[in-house]
Length: 100
Image (cartoon, rainbow, N blue to C red):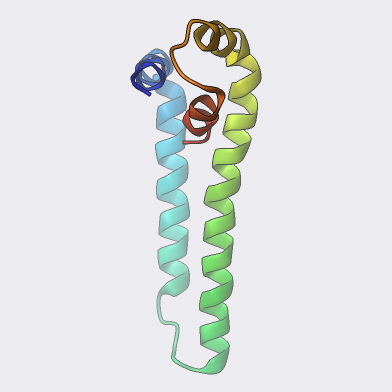
């Protein structure tokens, strides 16, 4: 797991623009969610609106991580294979690393 963390840290420091984009994306989605919850009442329709917004936020965050890992894994596959053969970590650890 330490090898995965080190590789992740190197990727973050090598691509500061990508990290800035992710931070801006998260802030914008958070602000939109906050504005959507502003002045929502306590009626049945409001509760359904809150549920729908919560579903949207959860799917947005989940698919954002899944799509980014879907792009990362093919690029890192030679490194993952080499580190797996060297016994640094297993395949499951590399998948968890790519997702988070």
